Image (tube, rainbow, N blue to C red; front, top):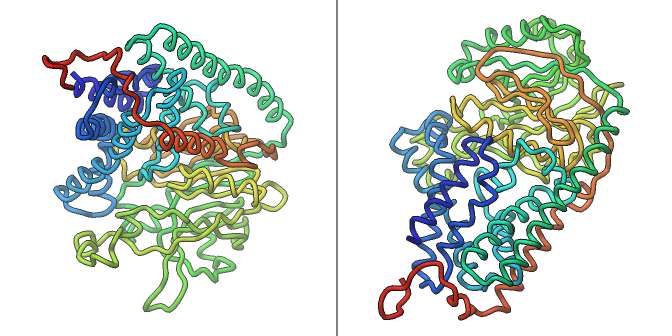
Length: 511
């Protein structure tokens, strides 16, 4: 029964990330997991239940990683599956640690301890795809507004607390269950009330901010077309044609990651006449490009975003900081060189250390987030806080994910950057999801996936200062301190077995 409950809980979390219309399920997904962990447990049982819940979450929700590792990294399919199994087992450790923390400590006053433990793990556990349970609430903008105070962790905290309160009510203990339900409900109502207050204020700020027209282009090029240099001019012709057909004429054009795949020297200051003709420049252009520096026989490559003006001058360049494993670099490749031989497509890119804001003269200051970087809150936060960015934009090539939920999951995780910093976030990808997200986390525009399409979108230049932009993950740090205090000061409570949800075998030995 315990194993079945852990399995159901993990599958419920996975379901909320495979279909975002199932967002209510996420509010009670931890109930069966906590019921599975109720009562006396041996150490091995807790570890096993954690693995069951973790695998039930990760294997279905992120199964697209097999194909991504295969296509992006160039590994044989069987080895990609092996990597995926290993990665799923590693990611399941988050649930194992959660199970061990719940086993170690009592549920706490008003069943709040599980929420403390889970948010600590959300904050610290090094997931390759850094999801939070709050990311499942993409379709409920009212609940997202707490992000400008706490990031996604405030909403995650309320969601897990609600699950813990329901689990407490099912286990028994009328007084403690009543207080848990009342207080967790009050926390959730507080999150919603904050949203009711903030949404009109953000809408007013947007209505009064200066507008700018952005051309966004989704070329829908195949992986083969992106990788093969023979398609270089054909690929650029696709983006050029889609751009020049736009009406009204945009103030700035944005093309996605690595559109320019023929390496450009980082010393470039001005395009040649033929280069300007190939790009068809009529407007300032922000585009992904491959750049290099160093000796011709041993160049160092960078995944960059370049700003050209309408005359072909290079006005700025910003390099990617967070490189993708198995594609842009090989994890442990320097220690295990045979891994590189198994994946000849894997690159050896150099990582930058900071976002370089790109100024379009007389229009706006942009902060480029390259691919995976829109999942990392500190990068966008520092671009706004220290770089004075007025508009966030992300470029990506999500063709590696294929026809899966991955691009939509990417969107669900990225949109928090708009809420946290109260900036427009424009995401421009090669195959989709390409979208415009307003500072309240609402998706105003989403282009159809796997179609060559372009549009002009009006966004606003904002300079709002948020608590989160100033102080970052203060809430997650506070919760972490509380969780550590609980674990260090509380011994396992023998009273937890007073109301076991699961029957005991004869003789009173724990199941």
